[in-house]
Amino acid sequence: MPKKESYLKRIKDIHLQNPAIAFSFLWVLVVPTLGSSLLLKGLYTNGLDWNKYDLYAPEIIIGLTLTGALLMGLAITPTTILAIATGFLWGWKAFLPLVIAYAMASLMGYFLGKRLGQNSLEIILSNYPKADRLIQDKKGKWGKLIFYIRISPVIPFALSNLLFALLKTGWKNVLVYGTLGMLPRTLMAFTLGTYAESFIQAFEGQENNGQILILISLMILSLWGIFRFFKKKSPTKKVKG
Image 1 (cartoon, rainbow, N blue to C red):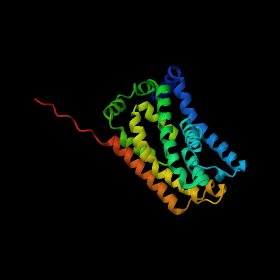
Image 2: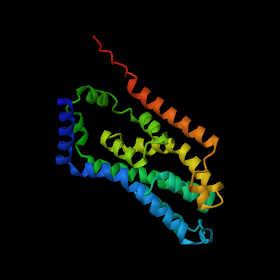
Image 3: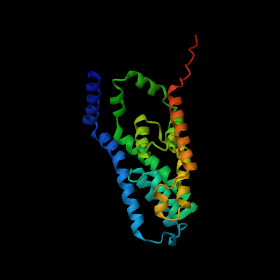
Image 4: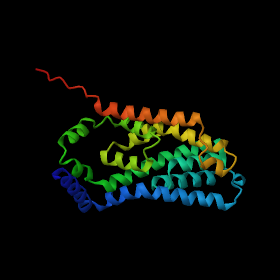
């Protein structure tokens, strides 16, 4: 019982000292689901001929890229849903703008989380010295962790942005390793959209055995990489006599 009380007290302390981060975690867990429902409903019922828009027009490219970055960066729409929709509506000519939007959204989510997070991680770890030492030991080596978290098909994009912000992994690591890590699952979702013949086919469970195998493989790789990252001991520095 004391441990449970201590854990609840820690949550209460975080909420009292920084309610913004508590609200942020609630936001990234709830809002993307609602946002995806609204997005899909709009695409189903809009009835527009999306192909009539010239994607190579600069204003269209910039508008789509900024819109995608805002939707993902503010945790309004899940990245997978947006990738499928983009692939379905515009095909491969929209893939590069999608990747750029993803990179921008990563930075947006990271800096927002860093601003809101403040000293929340210190509060969380104050009663867990072993975990604190582990985090301190891994500072400056976050690239691999970011890559393996991003490659996972089950860890939400917005939630991972908050995690990276609390860990203070550095925006360059988030940009480089995060973009590399997201490519496999985003490419798969985008490809699914390009081959779909209708919105229903694109969004309503058209995964085949090959896609399921890829998802399982990515999840296993992610879990293995995260486990190895935290279990691998950092080399100790030799003290010169």
